[in-house]
Amino acid sequence: MNERQTQAGLRIKSAYMRDRHLWRLIIIMLLWFIFMAVTRFSKFYTVVNFQTMFAQFPEFGLMSLGVMVCMITGGIDLSTVGIANVTAISTALLMQHIGGDSRHISVFWVVVVFLLAIVVGMIAGGVNGMLVAKLHIPPILATLGMGELFTGIGIVLTNGSAISDFPTTYAFAVNNRVLGIPVQFLIFAAAAVILSFMLIKTTYGKKLILLGTSQNVAKYSGLKVDMILIKTYLISGVCSALGGMIMLANYNSARADYGSNYTLQCILIVVLGGVSPNGGKGKISGVLLAIFLVRALETGLNRFPQISSYYVSLIWGAVLLLVMVLNYFTENDISLFKKKPNNFHAD
Image (cartoon, rainbow, N blue to C red; front, side, top):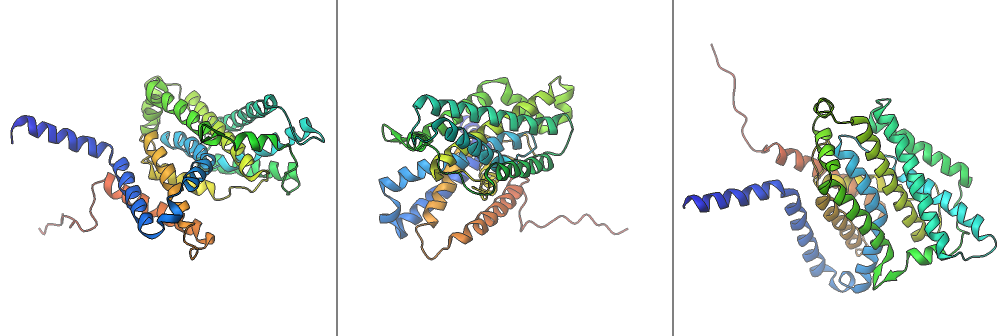
């Protein structure tokens, strides 16, 4: 083997090691699709099934994008579902007020409520960022507490019941299709493209990685750590708010306890996509692939009537633990069966 072939082989190996999370996701996805083709081909491989799949994952997919940017910094956002629900509730109440006795509002007001949702998400995310950056509260505690606070606000606003008597124009607009593509997916795709541009093409992405790698190094490098953290949690809040708006259209109602299992799914997606829980590592491409994989897994499981929906949380929890164990051994190049060296020497 000549030197050129050796260098080419090393480049291929380096590219594989760099993107092994992506390759692992692709392999898992191919195996799952093959399994579904063998066992449930007629029920899984239909146009309606894939249209439904693309229409339903944007709500927790958007929340996952928010969790991703927070986890890259070494933090986490556990308030995503709380922000989503309080956003859906507040906009549903606004549409009730605008529509009055009518069940219809103009498209202009649909745009207005989306802008309001973004504002609500920015405020909620900004508060999370202030708690983490300025008061130095650990992200897991700050966002967990804020998530419970937002849920409590939602319960107070609704008296614990669901809001469903708001104009139907909103659900019709968001559940519509443009050239056969669900509007919900277009909203998710737009958010993913904007966030991808920010992470890859701007200095924000590099600062985020440096901050997650070492906050002290980032601080001594002259980065405004507080502002980066506030901006990151603000982005997460906006993503959560948009996810709440899609939940509002899907359920055609708003309630404080909707999407209770989405927090676990978001964390699973982000870790499965190759983002390190310790921070400093992660790619949006891996998270996007993981979002589609988790939705394909859930849709496939629903095609087996003998698997109860009550087992879904159990399955996601087990998969999350398995993925974290696999990441530990692959990232540290540890083998379960590798014999540890004996460092004991007798005198």
